[in-house]
Image (cartoon, rainbow, N blue to C red):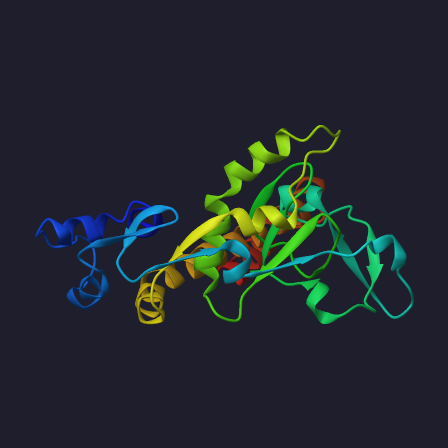
Length: 244
């Protein structure tokens, strides 16, 4: 749906041709323009703007966390590219908590590894510390689904850019965020679209968190069941507690 609305402009094409856009309320359909205008990217819906990725979101680079060794005041697992790819912090390095709050990752944060293996993911592996070579992506202006999906949209292009680097570890630079263009509708339109996209993203995050919890429970309970340390009724009770 995102590509249909914001990249292919299917509802605008429909209105331009005198057809009613499908899959939305009349109120939402009314917010789509019925014509196009020229832009630096070619034809875009009339009144919509062309911006760069770093204009719609902030890309915070992580810290060199070897400078933050764990101490007696507590610690955080270090989230590197490896943790991002597998979705958990099992076996991760540790760092102390004496860092700015913005460098602490929570479930639901958007992370973008910009060096080596380029990935854009929503994190659901628990609290952690943001390592270098990862961006934490946020915005005070646009909803999460908007900047997440636009960053994800440009991922393949970023991978091609990184692959062309004559280095052992391909990467992108901040300038590439400025070069990556996005189409931005009116504030009123984004608010209306939020009613469609936000619940979908929230449901996805909720399902991912539950899957993570169930996987942890499986890894904890299964060895105890096999060894006889835990009886089946007790395991079923534990499972019901996390799925209710």
